[in-house]
Length: 166
Image (cartoon, rainbow, N blue to C red; front, side):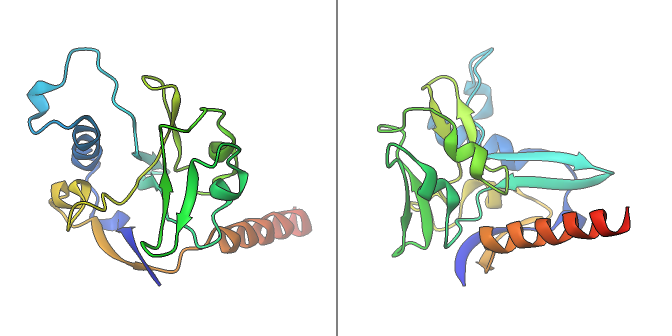
């Protein structure tokens, strides 16, 4: 089990406070009024509605991280001590390979810096700003056994089931 951000969709109001808090943290801002007009901070967490149910795209910090395995510049690295996948934007070439292989759709493009962006669990904070900003408790810091390989297996099983029944 590893430290991760856990999402509980039944509590989510789609207010996007978590997204704003994350973006402000990425820019080093304390007040949302300080965001410049037209400024597009990198998204490290995304929210969407699928069939009326809130869904989040956020890094699960996989133990066997396909993004780290696919990264050609070595910018995505699994840090075992922190139980997290760390991204170094300084060495990232912005090729997007990590984005293509992520089964959780949790990696986005940071057009301002011409590199990729993802959740880093805000290791310098006791509690990530996105979790603090979530007034309903839809986001919580917890433990998870999310695994990219498991998600791939489940998806493959669902595909096999569709082929066998349809």
